Length: 276
Image 1: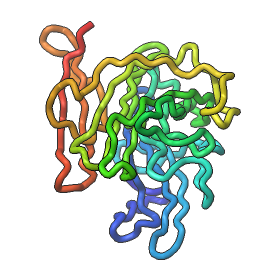
Image 2 (image 1 turned 60 degrees about the vertical axis):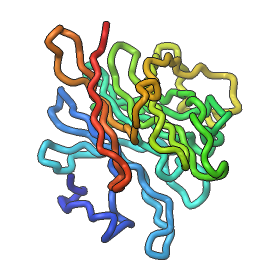
Image 3 (image 1 turned 90 degrees about the vertical axis):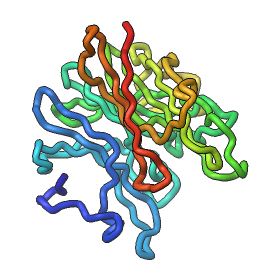
Image 4 (image 1 turned 90 degrees about the horizontal axis):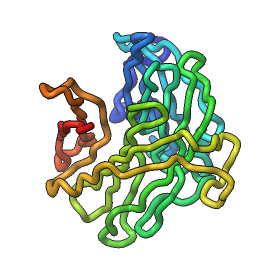
């Protein structure tokens, strides 16, 4: 995966200022190339504030940079607490069936759209952006309302989060949305899969302050699976795709965890059968 100009991206250990933070990768069946997203940065690096916009790059199958998608103004990083939250930007991505459009999900609410999800606070609005896959320009944005953080943190003021960790287009106007909740002091994550439908959702491209507005319709969602119900340890699941057709003709669905390069987090791959 190369930078514009052909140089490799530096390691975060050697050059955190210019390193990428890849999160999602999808294959374009029509163009026969790949797109991938990076979350950007707003943090003190090497004694200086590092401001790096998130991005979506198109590359060939050898990793050579081809082009970039246009970044909506609201998604640009600033030195102030406005726009996207650090490590809460382009987390999920999926083409529609004909690869005409690319849908990209923002993990957490923009500062302008209100506070983050929390224990006891549900319906925090996050944005799913619809891009024209040919012009690479955004054509619409839709609001998706998160569940609350699943469990209290220990201690109560410690880190906790819930956001969209991945999306996956499955049908006309419908996609799978994966929510990933984590709370300090509790091992593992709560992973929920929802069937989301954008057919009646309002384009909120020109709207801000979504948490206080009543003049738009969000994406509808229906819970399909709470992986807590599997009664086993579930780590930081962040990837989803269809797998091969099973012997009985049903589709398989594959989920994969991101271990964040941590020794105490597990590499996990989950295989499910999709029952029509």
